[in-house]
Image (tube, rainbow, N blue to C red; front, top):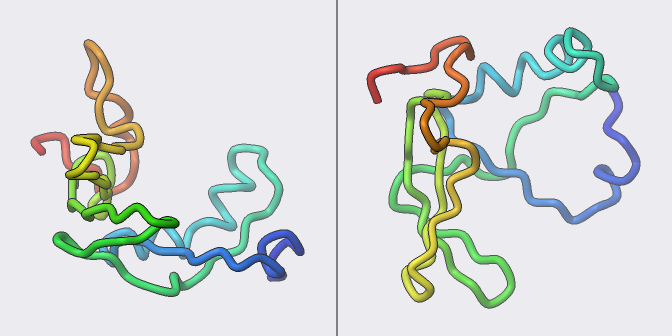
Length: 107
């Protein structure tokens, strides 16, 4: 599979938690199943774990392993701004999507 030019030619640093490796491997099938353009599987340039930090520009964010939505879901926390970037972990009045393979409803 070939990566799209915009991604192949970018300096994108792709990161993920190792417990979501199986989801990355399933990207081609998942993209086709839901009618998206074919997405290539990939190996991240860095595997994240709880307690790591990532830097975006001058901002440093703490990595928090927040399994539940997927086994390797992570959130990012900026201690200076007291700001959490959680993706779609929290939904008002709902637990959100829990139909992913290996989702953990009790977490």
